[in-house]
Length: 369
Image (cartoon, rainbow, N blue to C red; front, side, top):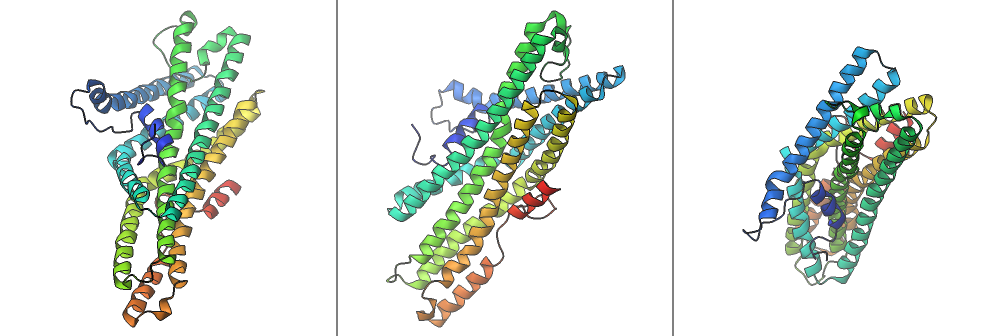
C-alpha cells in the first residue's frame, strides 16, 4: 500500500530501493536487514559498477593490443562510457545527498492532503498521475531496449558458439569464456538486470523532482488566483513569500546538485547517437539500435520537457498576481505585488553545467545538430 506522503514518488522510490539509493528510516532498531540495506547494499552496488568498469577497461586494452576489428572496440568503448556515466552520476548524487530531497517532497505532499482544499488536491492528483506515467514510460522503454539487447545477443550466440567471447557486455574475465559459458551468461544477465534498473533510476529521480517543483509552483498560482478576499492581504503576501522563497531555494539547490548530471545526459545522448549510427552501418541486426535510439530520444525529451515546465510555471506566477484585484488594495500591498511580479520575470531554471539553461528549445537544437 502506498503511503499518503509518497504517492508522487511511489514508482521512483521502488526503483531507488532496488539500486540502494533510498534511505529507509530505521524506526525499529532490531530490524537488522534494514540496517544492512542502508549501510552495505548501496556500497555493494557501487563497488560492483566499479569492478564492471575495470573489467571493460581491461577488455578494451586487450582488444587494442590484439588488433581486433574496430567495431568491437567501438562497442566496448560505448558500454564503458555508459558505465562511467552511471558511476559519475551516482557519485554526484551521493556528494550532494540528492535522495535527501525526497524528504521535502514527502513533507509537502502531506500538507497538500491535509489542506482540505479540493481543487488543490485535484490538481495534485493529476500531477501524481502525470509523474507516474512519466516514470513508467522511462522504465518501460528501458526494459524494452534491454530485452531487445538480450534477445539479439542470444540469437547471435545460437548462430555462432564463438560469439560467447563478446556476448552482451564486452567484459574481461579471468577464465576461458568458451570453457565457462554458463558463468559468462550468468554474469552478463546479472549485469543487464541491474543496468535495466539503474539506468532509468537516475532519470526517474530527476524527473520526479522536476514534476514536484513545477507542481508546487502551480499550486502557488492557484492560491494567488483564489485568495480569500476576507484575508488580510499583508498576511497572505507574507505566507506567499515564505512558500515562494522555499521553492526558489529548493530549485536552486536542486540545480546546483544536478547541473553536471544534466550536462552528462546531453553529452551521452550525442555519444549514443554516434554509437547507433555505427551499429546501423556495421550490423544486420537493426532492431536494437533503433529501439535504443528511441529510448534515448524519449528520455532526453521527457527530462527537457519537465525542466522547461519549471521555467514556465515560475514565470506564470507573475501573471497570476497580475490577474488579481490588486488595483483595489492599498498602496503598500500594490508595491509588494509589483516587487513579486518583477521577481517572477527572472525564471527559475535548471542548467546544463556552465552551458546554459535546460529548456525545450535546447533539446530541439541538440536533436537537430
